[in-house]
Figure 1 (cartoon, rainbow, N blue to C red):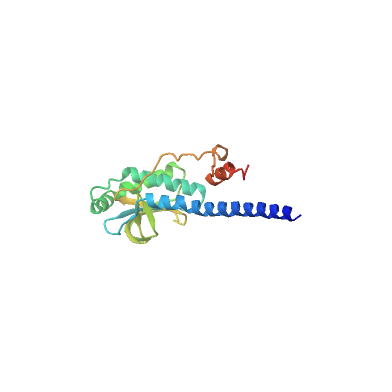
Figure 2: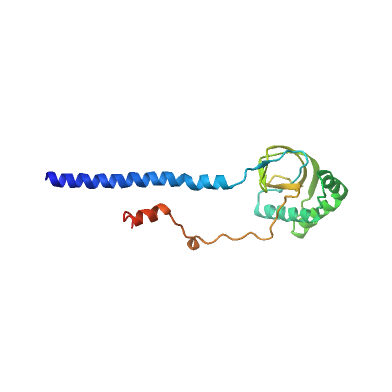
Length: 198
């Protein structure tokens, strides 16, 4: 009986040791990818509001149709823009071609069956923190071309017109279906190699 109790205690001790080792390995490995990723990413450059012109498009409402046309208006305005070599060039372009920019927005609304209008304003407006191309644009006031569609009560979209960082892709890539993804765990593979996990 004493020998059985000692064998059982030895087995429990080995199992507890395996669990402690596995827990320690999990904790050590858990932070490793985070530390590696942080070490590999270059630090963000922090921009100032000086020398920046932003584009801010505000949808009529949050309906799917209003949100979709907001992006089409954005695309029409970006196709018309010529930012130039400086923020002054970009602002001068907006001032000289404001009528064309407004006409592009209005035409896009009409082509998509909307009866409300657009308003363009060039001024100083508040913006939240945003990162574009590795540069952080902290919250604050920025010069911007603001495009308000209809009542302007919907979600908005913004980017940086100068320096030119408004990146728009024609089609978003579809994410793979969940059944096409394969997940691997180094810890589970290690435990399997020890015969602890099947």
